[in-house]
Length: 125
Image (cartoon, rainbow, N blue to C red; front, side):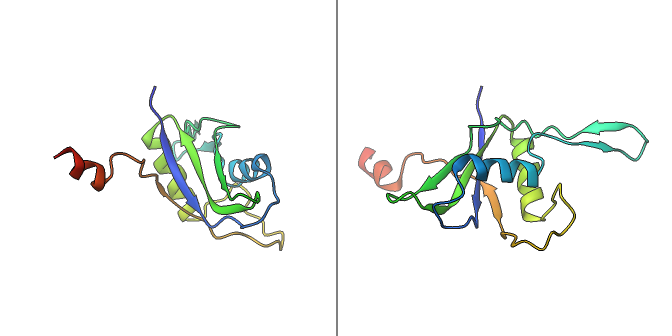
């Protein structure tokens, strides 16, 4: 099975919170595990983002352990990844109430996986 990664920027550049806390925050804030919603026909639907789940998020840290301000979320489908990107970029939060706390302004896009670089391609010629 292949997967799709979403590149998320705007995380605090600090040692705390832990990777698990950052992942839990993103999961809760953007309903990565899926949410139930009432559709216009009165039925109940579930947004299935196909997030790979807890432990699948890669938080990038420097040599001193500080978050470098970005992370990669992993999804089993491009559609799920695109829905998560839309939620993050349009600030659709599962917690609509404003508790007065500092909110991070995050941005997301499909990750551009490292493939062959131009230098490698030139060497092959």
